[in-house]
Structures are given as C-alpha cells and as structure tokens.
Length: 101
Image (cartoon, rainbow, N blue to C red; front, side, top):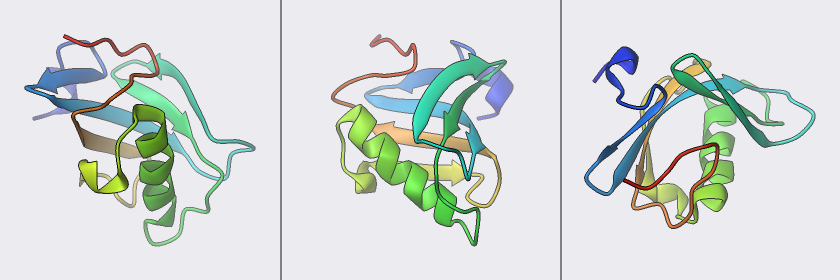
C-alpha cells in the first residue's frame, strides 16, 4: 500500500488495524502529535535519530497515545526515515483527528 492510496489522506482502516502514514520529527522539544500535513500525520519526538532509535521511541509514545502495547505497532517502512508507515492493531483510543470506522 502506498501513502497516496490511503482513504482518509493520512490513515485508513484495514479491519481493526489502523494504517497510519507519519512525518516524523526527531529531537523535538516535546513528544506531540500535530496536525496532518498532506497525506502524513506529523509526530514529533524528543529522541535522537540514530539507528532507528527515534522510531522505536515514537512507537512507544504512540502506543501510549493509542492505548496499545508497543508490540501492537508494526513499522511497515521508514524505520530510519522521517517518512513512515505504521500498522496499529486494534487501537483502544484515537488521536490526531483519526476516527473509528
């Protein structure tokens, strides 16, 4: 699945899995989910972008935001890039303008 194929711009549902395109910003002042930019949701985290550590940190941050464990989030692509796609299994709560189907 490519980013431009997503139904709601930056996210879509695949059954109970939330497929989310992310524009990540490492080394931010705080961890925060911002407004979408085009077909990506902007997410800033405090972590350093070194060997995918910022992505791992972002997964932990987003797990708390969506009420799931880190193991429920799969990084489809972009582990060492600011452009990412994540699959979040059965999120318990939503954030960033995302709505349940």
